[in-house]
Image (cartoon, rainbow, N blue to C red; front, side):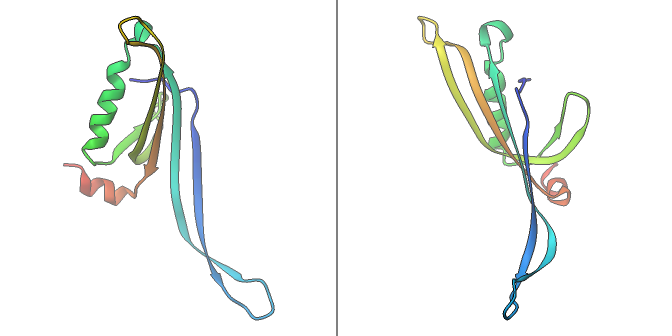
Length: 120
């Protein structure tokens, strides 16, 4: 597993605009919009041996299936897809392996019914 440094969550809410003559548009709530999470973190492969964890996440993302997000306290956040994995390596050993890897995971929430259909 990888340890993230922070969690940034964005929740959007949809409001349809209804035009009105001579006034501001009225708004009607049409439901929840997108929910996304970004998890930036730093891994030190020499110390924690987490280089393979990023490769495992890439393999999971390539399967094209939603994954359940559960935090270290056991709180279930819901079903998400991995939209993007960023990796920045630095402080390399003479053989080219990095001592420090910064990463960011970009997750997008999917509806629970969509997640259930996609899981075996």
